[in-house]
Picture 1 (cartoon, rainbow, N blue to C red):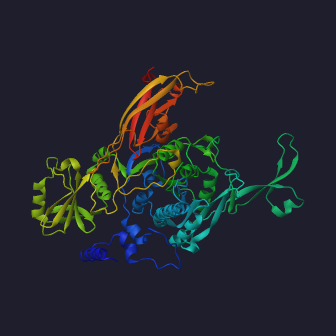
Picture 2 (picture 1 turned 180 degrees about the horizontal axis):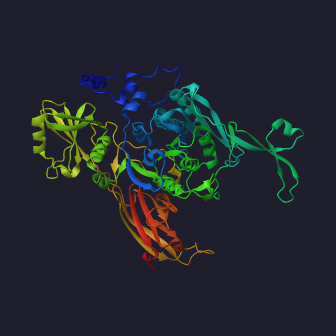
Picture 3 (picture 1 turned 120 degrees about the vertical axis):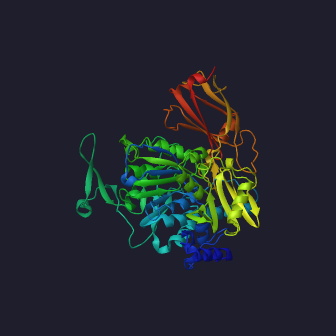
Length: 626
C-alpha cells in the first residue's frame, strides 16, 4: 500500500466515515496464485478496480415504453467503452451480483499489417497480443464482480487466443471454477490444402461458485441409420417417414442430452436472422447457452454486443438483458433488430412485440439534456462524472456535496443562483470562509458558461481551487492517465477492432455541407434493371468540433467515419438500411449513389465522425435535384 493511499485511509477513519468500496481489494488482496500469466503492462487487480474511471449513464430514448416488465426493470442498450460502463454497473445495486449469465465474444484485430523483418513482425505481434490480453483481463475482473453467486460466464474465442485467455480466467475465476470448453462446430469456413481446415470455435465456461451454479440440461436431435434393436437400447427414438409416400425411410431421429460439441450452422446472408454486421453469431448458439445457464426473468449481460444476438435471444426467452458496445454501427444494428424480432429462434414465425429497452450514452453526453435535468439529478450526474463520492456536509455554514479523494467538492447550483458567476472575487470569498478548514485542494463543479477566468485552478495561500467545467474540463492533475475518445471505424475491416476510451466527452455536431442530386450512373455501371438515374449524395465538407483546451487540427473529411441511411424513415425511430464507410467513400470521391426508388416518403441520413458524434439530415426525393 503506497503512502498516498495510507494517508487517505487514515483521514477517512479519523473522520469516522465509511470506507469506499474501491478500497476492498487494497485492504484485503487475494492470496498469491500458484501460477499466473506474465506479460508486459499487466496491472494489479486492486489498481484496476480502484482506478478505472466510471461514467454515468445518460438515458437517450426508451423504446416500447407502453409495455411493462417485472419490478419496473427496463432492458439496457448502452453506447460506450465497456470498461468504464462496467465500473459504473458494479455500483448499481440492481446489477452487481445479480447478473445470472454473461456471454461475451470479444474482438481481436487479426488483420493488422505489420511491416519490417520477420523477427520485428513477431515482436509486434506479441505486443499486440499483450495489449489484447490486458484489455480483456480488465473487463473480466469487473464481470466477475457483477456475476451472481450462482451465475456463469461464457467467453467465445477462436484458436488464436483461447489458450492465453484460459490461463487468465484461471487466475481471475480460479481453475476449479472452469466447467469445460464447448466446441462450436460448423461446416463452412476456411478451405485450404496448406493446413487442417478450421471448422470450429471454442467457448470457455466458468462459474462463480462450483457448489451453487445454475444449470438446465439441454437436448438435441440426432439423425441415425436404423439398426435392429435400436428402439430397445435408445428409448426416445422416432422414425422419420418419407413426406411424399408416407413409408418407412429407415432413418431414425433420437433426442439426447447435448454434449460439449455443438453442430450449429453459421449465419448466412440469406438467413432470416441475418443482419449486415461482421462476426454475427447464430441465435441457436445463444439459445442453448441462455437456456442452460439462466431462467426466465434472469439478467443476461453481453458487453461486446456486436450484432445483438444475445439480447435478441434473451428477449425471445423472456430474460432481462444488458448489452454494451462502443460502435455506433452496432448500436443502430441492434436497435433495428430488436424492433423487428420474430418469435422463433432463427427469426421465424410471428412478429414479436419487444419489451421496453432504454438506449444510454456512457462517456459521450448531450450537454443540453444534462442542463435540463432537475437539480438533484444534475448534481448526482455531475458528481459521478468527475468520480466524486456523494456525501453532503457543511463547513463554516457552506453546504458541500461530496469528496474527490479526500478533498471537498462543491457542485455550484447555477439553477438557484442565476445571477452569480464564478470570478476571482468568488474564489476570494470562498477562501476567506474555508481557507483554514480544508485540504490543499478544493473542487468546484460548474457549467463552463458560469466561469469568468480561463485557468483550471486558482491558488490561494497554497490551496488550489480547481474548477471542473462542464462540458469541457479535463484536469490532468486529477486524471493521470489522460483522456481519449472511443474511435469509430472508417473501414468495414475495423468494425471489430479493439476500441477503448479513458474519460468522457460531450456531443459536438460536425459541420457538414453536401449536394443532393440525380445523375446518370457512372460509366461502365449501366446494366440490366439499373435505374436511368441514381440519387447522389456528394459530401463536400465534413469537419468535427472539439471542446478541449488543446484542440486537434484535422483536414476536411479526415474525421468522417461512416454514413448510415434509413431509406424509409418513419419520423420516430432510425431504422438502419445501409452503411457506407469513409475508407470506401474516399475511393469514390465521397459520393454515395443509390436507386432513388428506395426512398419511400422521406429518408434519414446520419453522418458519423470517428468520435461518435452525428449530424442528421432528413431528405425527400424532391430534395435531389436533376
